[in-house]
Length: 210
Length: 223
Image (cartoon, rainbow over all chains, first blue to last red):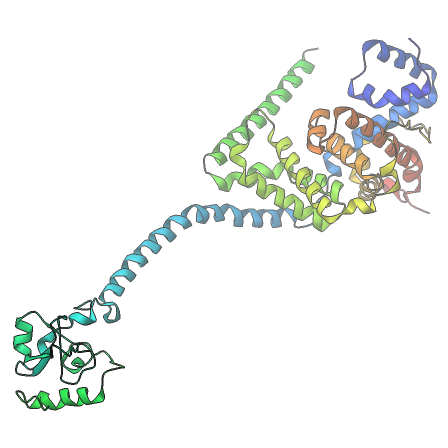
């Protein structure tokens, strides 16, 4: 096997790597013995590999090691926080949630009202002798003149005392009797006359005022 | 006759103990002794910086890329498997980081003319100066080191990357191909070109010209 210069230049790098087959290697070595140029190319290429493979050629900027170490130190401490943080944040959040829940539960503004419906307001403040009216088709008693008293032409409203009405299972109208109830509810349609009556009769039980 | 095999045995033992020490360090870091990680990286600081610089050609960018690569290696140290060399693994992470940054910077737009040359084209050496000997002391001279660095910097990107990984970082052909995502054949072709181009650039100077021009060598006086 005979090789020319161009063939040698193509394979000189592989020759240095030891990646040419024995036949080609022998042919190249024979060529180097005769060709000064190719020998110069081989020697120079080998020198390049040798020079650049020397660690002394590797230079880093001044302070490189310190800056790398500093950044690495920051990083090596960070994962601990990353690992722990979710746990303590979750624990703290859970504690805060419980404490907040307790605080909210005890707060006045969120306290459960004693009665849930306006129509079931406590009748404790109503004078027992207060004259009230009831209709047959309703379970609510009213002050005289209340617009919400169901009136029927053939059957007038029944009059009785508040205590009797309550005894029979009637509940006070939250509109006309609101001043006696625990939670006052504005009655936009209740007549002012009925309210005034209710206020007047609070001091004079037993007088219907009609 | 007896001294040579003994010396070789000592060298092998030294290399083995260094490898074992490195493997032990890796194991301890993986087990949670994270403060030892720098000790693991320290011997390869120069290599990873050089690898990053070969790709990015900017000192600040290369340093940042090298640091980022080390941090990534730290984050993924548990994924490192003992069958690979730590230095190779670290270098590959650095190369990937640098390549990613270069892609982001769109430097391909500004690639040199040499970058577009055909890979299979033959390269004809231009200089046949006799350059047989290189004294080991040449690398002690800063200006020689600078000339060598400048010569590499003139290479087109694709040749420089392969050359630095193979001949400076001492990655194998396969490892270089894997790190750069190119074929083994491409590595060999580019490596040939890079070596021959560098030889053309350096032979005239390192063959004698640079040394002849250096004044006051070894106690000589100009008068």
